[in-house]
Image 1: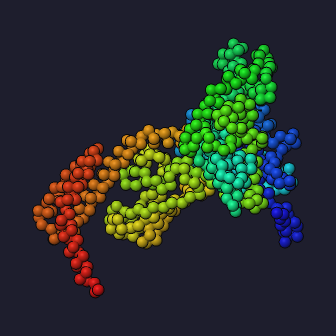
Image 2: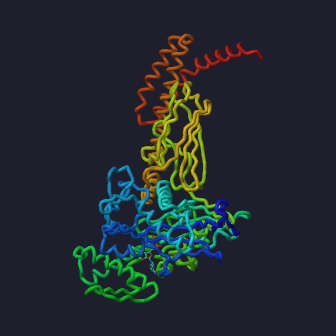
Length: 619
Ligand code: ADP
Ligand code: MG
């Protein structure tokens, strides 16, 4: 469909907006569009290369360079050359303290809860600002190639990115002068690039993405739809955020040091970087040749394909374990996978492809450039959003359960983990104290029964609840999770209409390991968690019972005998004494006893109340 827009005031015709697709990678970034021939195309620079290394260099006179020219400074100006900033997106210092050692630059901790900053010279930059430099470079490239202003983009993120990381990516786009229309998952984008959005039959797709520093395996379900293309759903994700082509390079360097009899701790930083870059050259060479031979000074850099494959076998095996875990989480067997998609520069290594073909027992999709496919898919999604293609709904899942804290510190799940997003869910609550005018709503993420074991995302207070007896207010709490994974929580007291809402943008994010760790903990602790939940529930019930009895006795003293009152009081004290017991049965028995004792006169009074009410009514 062709479109033109006419500026009525100036009488000029402007070109239609082009929305670009961007793969903002840990190692490399790219920008892609749908070209005039209707084909996805990654945009190249004058040297005909599409890949922009995700590296930012801060020069002496404030000159900032991005990409290949910045890459050279990894050797000669380490402290001012920033790479892998994607790892820091949406993270606090606490989140990344453990990885500081892997980075050549300085990460600053001013407050453990706040987002990290990176110190370059005398200035501090946030990961959002640094990513914005990369995005600005991609924007400029697109503007140069297309000869028009670019202001809109679709950006991809890993499927496991949480709210904070997605929001940070969006903010980086904004800072770079881009209106980010959609954040989509990398595996979904890769599947789109392989045309899987237009197939006729339902498909289960495994997307194997081995990049520079990270490995992700995602299992997607594609459901075709008659009218509006198909939709993708992420069934499971797994991986390792510290496994990638860089590790292949590291193993090669270690191999060379060994074969040259050099101790690693005698090698200075600069030589180490030179060796690393040489190792990468060797690795790439070995993707199409059998042997690599070179020298750095008098260090012999020699490697055969066989030696290389032996070196990386443990790493490739590790990716296979992740694949098995993802299949297990999705409840699938290897034979259930219809299509396997290869993504990431490291899948250019023939051994990786071969290992995957063997594992899945099927040929893999590798006809597109693995380092471009995510960007190409983002370009397709951008074109869909521009209205140039039939709309496809892209579904994702939420990786951890979302809920609120209820009485006794228990987690009440509102949106369970693995729910398709966008989604919404709500539940009704009430007050526990007479005349309660405020309710604190604390939002948590995680799988454990006690909120103290989960991650707090936010809290807010619903105030101005009109005074009512405990249990009477009807407080509805609604969770709305949008397509970008941003959560909105609303609380409303239905009788009075008082309401309050917040958007949850967590201050800092979770790493994939932490997320995996949280799930693992929940499985490991399922039994003790359940027991603890039962005890807490019994205690809450006991406390409610005591409160009710107290109110009942005070209110109805005139209609009760002395024996009834003293008997109730005795049982109340007995129940009170069990409150600290860790045996839920003991608490339950005392609740029962109190119940039994009070039932006859509670019923008597109830009958009285009903007959009084009936008298007042004219039937
Ligand atoms: P990311 O998604 O992490 O940004 P990419 O998908 O661009 O990264 O992958 C980068 C990795 O791919 C680097 O480790 C690079 O060395 C590796 N790579 C690129 N080309 C080849 C090749 N021909 N053979 C093997 N590995 C390659
Ligand atoms: Mg990538």
